[in-house]
Each structure stands twice: as C-alpha cells, then as structure tokens.
Image 1 (cartoon, rainbow, N blue to C red):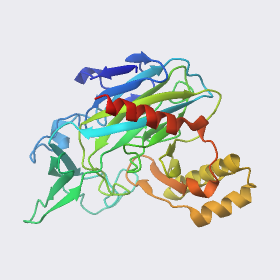
Image 2: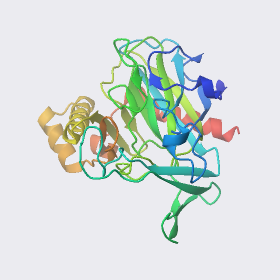
Image 3: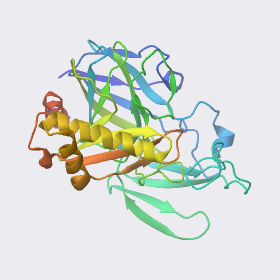
Length: 336
C-alpha cells in the first residue's frame, strides 16, 4: 500500500485554490495522511481570542495542499475517498461575527441596524465518547451533542488559470460546508489543470445544515484520504457518493440557483446512469430525492441534491471508484 504523510508548517498552508505550486506529487491509488488546520489557523484558542483581533484577512480558512495527481488532465475526474476524519485537539471553537452569517447584515445585504456582537464559544471535544459539549456564553445552559466530523472545504484548481479564495465554493469545489462530506464518503471533482491540484481543509467536529451563524464547531483534523483518477470522465460540479446515496452539489447566489444547479446535475446524472429520458429522471428525483442545505453564509451558497442509489437499479458509477476506494480504506485501517 502506498501511503503518503504530510503535515504542513504554518507557512505552507494555502488560502486559494489555484495560483500556487503543488506541495507533493502522488500517484493514483495513494492513501494520503494529512493534518488540516481550523478555519482560524489555530489562532482562536480561548473566549477572549476574537477573530478580528487575532486573525488577519484574507488569511482565513487555510487548506492543506495542493497535491498533484500524476496523470490527471482536464476532462478527467479525481475521486477522493475520506477514510477517516478525526479531531486533532480536545477543543474546538465557534463564533459569531458582526457582518458574517445568515441572520445579520453583510456587505451585500446592507442594513441600518447594529451589527451582531463578536462572540467566541469554546467546545470540549471528547473523541472517545464521540461528543462535543456546547456551553452557553450568557447563561448556565450546557448540552452534549454527537461528534460528527466533516470537512467544509475540498476542491481542485479552477479552470482558466484562476485563483479563488478558499472561502468561495463553486464548480471547482471550495468551501461548500455540507455535513454530508464525512468519513465514508467519496467526492468526485472535475480536473481543470494538469495534476488536478486538490486541497482539503476547514474541519468541523459537527455542523448544522446551512451553517447559519457562519461558523461550525471549527477544529483541526487528522484526515486520511484515498485517491483515485477516473480518466476521460468529466464532472461538471462536485459530486458525492456514500454506500447508499448519490449527491450533486451546486454553489451560487441566490440560493434558488444553487438549488437548481444541484437538482439539474442530479437529474442529468441519473438520466445518464440509467438511460432514462430526462423527464423520467426529473420525475424520479422529484419524488425520491432530498435537498440538504450546505451553507447559506459564504460568498456563494451551497445546496445538495441527494438520491438513494437503490432507486437507480445499481448502475456502475465512476467505474466503481467508491467501492474500490472504500476497500482500500478498510485495508489501510486494518493495517494500523
């Protein structure tokens, strides 16, 4: 088994997709062990560490990478299977911001009312009990919630030599912030440049759908990803597959357009997999699908369209990359 380990120094973290050289070159079939920093670069460690004081814009939402996958060319698809996502610390943080989030004025939603307070919440992370503990800042209320690690940000270099801030989700991936992107899931990303140049970051111990306040339970992660290349198969928008479902994503503003992109991709994908007429696929997705919200706070919003694979009659999906990578991941875990 080909295993590559990478822990970036702080100066090696990236804040864009595109616009920087690869930190390493790997071959398809490699299992990558990586450390990812939280969205604040590890600078928010206590209740008094306000992001506006300890962080510097635009150095937010760092990602680990990019990784060059040998043989990847435009028109191909990278398959990244998340073998494990585990908190690297016993604490995590969340915040509210004066001008960021779904329920406050922002630079694009101008209001005259006062901005929200900037407040930090510190979460206790118990990896053995698989819980995180919420504590109210303005009262004595506390509650344990299940640990459900995920990555908010994963993507490849965009097309046309663009460099995009990691906070922005789009067709290349980016800061989609969908809780569906957890261990056991394979994400498919269309290759735009030689090598693909994928990066991963923005770990969350858990997150509600929509990431309504603008942040999740933000945490550094130790993550293991199995990588495969699907030659000659293009992917227009990031897609996800778990053992039971196919998922399409869409990122845009307004939210309706993100919804339409994700639904359109799932309908046309289902049609191509089954040979169904497009309207028949439209009807199937309309009655059998779900629509989890990714984020409603970033520079683009993200929606997910989700359909049980059982409704599609068992077609081959990306040359069965998910099942092969899942097996590779199981072999990796059993060897540790």
